[in-house]
Length: 178
Image 1: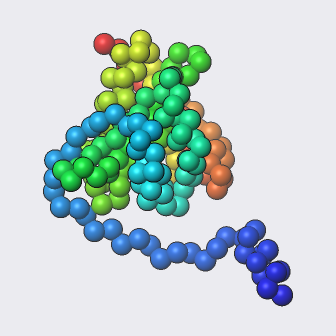
Image 2: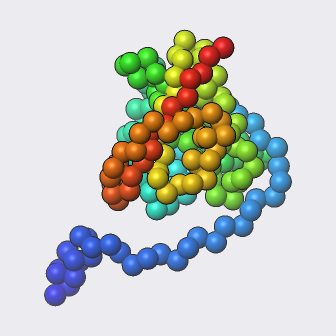
Protein backbone atom coordinates (compact mmCIF):
# COMPACT_ATOMS: atom_id res chain seq x y z
CA UNK A 1 0.00 0.00 0.00
CA UNK A 2 2.88 2.37 0.74
CA UNK A 3 4.21 1.85 -2.80
CA UNK A 4 0.84 2.81 -4.33
CA UNK A 5 0.67 5.87 -2.13
CA UNK A 6 4.18 6.89 -3.16
CA UNK A 7 3.34 6.45 -6.86
CA UNK A 8 0.09 8.39 -6.45
CA UNK A 9 1.93 11.26 -4.74
CA UNK A 10 4.51 11.29 -7.51
CA UNK A 11 1.89 11.87 -10.23
CA UNK A 12 -0.53 14.09 -8.35
CA UNK A 13 0.12 17.57 -7.01
CA UNK A 14 1.51 17.55 -3.52
CA UNK A 15 -0.10 19.25 -0.60
CA UNK A 16 -0.03 22.98 -0.84
CA UNK A 17 2.86 24.41 1.08
CA UNK A 18 2.40 27.13 3.60
CA UNK A 19 3.01 30.52 2.03
CA UNK A 20 6.50 31.83 2.70
CA UNK A 21 6.51 34.66 5.24
CA UNK A 22 8.66 37.39 3.73
CA UNK A 23 10.19 39.97 6.03
CA UNK A 24 11.59 42.89 4.04
CA UNK A 25 15.35 43.31 4.37
CA UNK A 26 16.61 46.48 6.03
CA UNK A 27 17.28 49.34 3.62
CA UNK A 28 20.71 49.14 2.01
CA UNK A 29 22.73 50.14 -1.03
CA UNK A 30 23.04 47.76 -3.97
CA UNK A 31 25.59 47.29 -6.68
CA UNK A 32 25.45 45.39 -9.96
CA UNK A 33 28.41 43.14 -10.74
CA UNK A 34 29.21 40.48 -13.31
CA UNK A 35 28.04 36.99 -12.42
CA UNK A 36 30.68 34.29 -12.95
CA UNK A 37 30.98 30.53 -12.64
CA UNK A 38 32.39 31.11 -9.14
CA UNK A 39 28.90 32.30 -8.15
CA UNK A 40 27.17 29.12 -9.36
CA UNK A 41 26.18 27.71 -5.95
CA UNK A 42 24.94 31.09 -4.72
CA UNK A 43 22.81 31.68 -7.83
CA UNK A 44 21.35 28.16 -7.52
CA UNK A 45 20.23 28.84 -3.94
CA UNK A 46 18.79 32.25 -4.86
CA UNK A 47 17.04 30.86 -7.94
CA UNK A 48 15.07 28.39 -5.81
CA UNK A 49 13.96 31.23 -3.52
CA UNK A 50 13.04 33.52 -6.41
CA UNK A 51 10.98 30.95 -8.29
CA UNK A 52 9.60 28.93 -5.41
CA UNK A 53 6.51 27.79 -7.29
CA UNK A 54 7.74 28.20 -10.81
CA UNK A 55 10.15 26.75 -13.31
CA UNK A 56 13.67 26.68 -11.92
CA UNK A 57 16.81 26.42 -13.97
CA UNK A 58 19.03 23.46 -13.16
CA UNK A 59 22.67 23.53 -12.18
CA UNK A 60 23.51 22.38 -15.70
CA UNK A 61 21.56 25.24 -17.30
CA UNK A 62 23.28 27.84 -15.13
CA UNK A 63 26.65 26.18 -15.74
CA UNK A 64 26.00 26.40 -19.49
CA UNK A 65 24.91 30.05 -19.34
CA UNK A 66 27.89 31.03 -17.20
CA UNK A 67 30.33 29.40 -19.61
CA UNK A 68 28.68 30.24 -22.94
CA UNK A 69 30.48 33.12 -24.73
CA UNK A 70 27.15 34.42 -26.14
CA UNK A 71 25.75 34.80 -22.63
CA UNK A 72 25.98 37.78 -20.27
CA UNK A 73 25.02 37.65 -16.61
CA UNK A 74 24.86 40.07 -13.72
CA UNK A 75 24.18 39.87 -10.01
CA UNK A 76 22.75 42.44 -7.65
CA UNK A 77 24.71 42.56 -4.40
CA UNK A 78 23.65 44.11 -1.09
CA UNK A 79 25.92 46.01 1.32
CA UNK A 80 26.83 42.77 3.08
CA UNK A 81 28.09 41.28 -0.24
CA UNK A 82 25.12 38.87 -0.41
CA UNK A 83 23.73 38.19 -3.89
CA UNK A 84 20.10 39.36 -3.87
CA UNK A 85 19.34 39.28 -7.59
CA UNK A 86 20.52 37.99 -10.94
CA UNK A 87 19.85 38.33 -14.65
CA UNK A 88 20.98 36.33 -17.68
CA UNK A 89 20.94 37.30 -21.33
CA UNK A 90 21.80 35.07 -24.28
CA UNK A 91 22.58 36.26 -27.78
CA UNK A 92 20.29 34.30 -30.12
CA UNK A 93 21.35 32.98 -33.51
CA UNK A 94 19.08 35.58 -35.13
CA UNK A 95 21.04 38.46 -33.58
CA UNK A 96 18.58 39.36 -30.83
CA UNK A 97 19.28 39.40 -27.12
CA UNK A 98 17.11 37.04 -25.08
CA UNK A 99 16.58 37.87 -21.42
CA UNK A 100 16.46 34.27 -20.21
CA UNK A 101 15.83 34.88 -16.52
CA UNK A 102 15.81 37.60 -13.93
CA UNK A 103 15.23 37.01 -10.24
CA UNK A 104 15.19 39.07 -7.06
CA UNK A 105 15.26 37.70 -3.50
CA UNK A 106 11.74 38.07 -2.04
CA UNK A 107 12.89 40.26 0.85
CA UNK A 108 14.61 42.71 -1.55
CA UNK A 109 11.77 43.12 -4.06
CA UNK A 110 10.09 46.42 -4.98
CA UNK A 111 13.34 48.39 -4.61
CA UNK A 112 14.19 48.84 -8.27
CA UNK A 113 16.68 45.96 -8.47
CA UNK A 114 14.99 44.23 -11.41
CA UNK A 115 14.99 47.53 -13.27
CA UNK A 116 18.70 48.02 -12.52
CA UNK A 117 19.52 44.53 -13.78
CA UNK A 118 17.34 45.02 -16.86
CA UNK A 119 19.21 48.23 -17.73
CA UNK A 120 22.54 46.40 -17.45
CA UNK A 121 21.25 43.65 -19.74
CA UNK A 122 20.04 46.19 -22.29
CA UNK A 123 23.37 48.03 -22.18
CA UNK A 124 25.23 44.72 -22.69
CA UNK A 125 23.00 43.99 -25.70
CA UNK A 126 23.80 47.37 -27.25
CA UNK A 127 27.53 46.90 -26.54
CA UNK A 128 27.37 43.59 -28.42
CA UNK A 129 25.77 45.31 -31.42
CA UNK A 130 22.30 43.84 -30.78
CA UNK A 131 19.27 46.02 -31.40
CA UNK A 132 16.46 43.94 -29.89
CA UNK A 133 15.81 42.32 -26.51
CA UNK A 134 13.13 39.64 -26.23
CA UNK A 135 11.76 37.89 -23.15
CA UNK A 136 8.96 35.67 -21.95
CA UNK A 137 6.88 36.51 -18.90
CA UNK A 138 4.16 34.51 -17.18
CA UNK A 139 0.64 35.64 -18.06
CA UNK A 140 -0.11 35.73 -14.34
CA UNK A 141 2.96 37.75 -13.34
CA UNK A 142 1.39 41.19 -13.49
CA UNK A 143 4.21 42.85 -11.54
CA UNK A 144 6.87 41.71 -14.00
CA UNK A 145 4.68 42.64 -16.97
CA UNK A 146 4.30 46.13 -15.53
CA UNK A 147 8.07 46.45 -15.05
CA UNK A 148 8.70 45.46 -18.66
CA UNK A 149 5.96 47.73 -20.03
CA UNK A 150 7.34 50.71 -18.09
CA UNK A 151 10.79 49.88 -19.50
CA UNK A 152 9.40 50.07 -23.05
CA UNK A 153 8.70 46.41 -23.84
CA UNK A 154 5.69 45.50 -25.97
CA UNK A 155 3.70 42.27 -25.96
CA UNK A 156 4.21 40.63 -29.33
CA UNK A 157 2.45 37.31 -28.79
CA UNK A 158 0.71 35.15 -26.22
CA UNK A 159 2.14 31.63 -26.16
CA UNK A 160 -0.30 29.07 -24.82
CA UNK A 161 0.85 26.55 -22.20
CA UNK A 162 4.46 27.72 -22.33
CA UNK A 163 5.40 26.79 -18.77
CA UNK A 164 5.51 23.26 -17.35
CA UNK A 165 2.43 23.93 -15.22
CA UNK A 166 0.46 24.86 -18.35
CA UNK A 167 0.48 28.61 -17.77
CA UNK A 168 0.65 30.90 -20.79
CA UNK A 169 3.36 33.47 -21.33
CA UNK A 170 3.64 36.72 -23.17
CA UNK A 171 6.52 37.18 -25.60
CA UNK A 172 7.70 40.76 -25.16
CA UNK A 173 10.18 42.76 -27.19
CA UNK A 174 12.02 46.05 -27.08
CA UNK A 175 14.25 47.82 -29.57
CA UNK A 176 17.45 49.01 -27.90
CA UNK A 177 19.83 51.38 -29.65
CA UNK A 178 22.73 53.58 -28.64
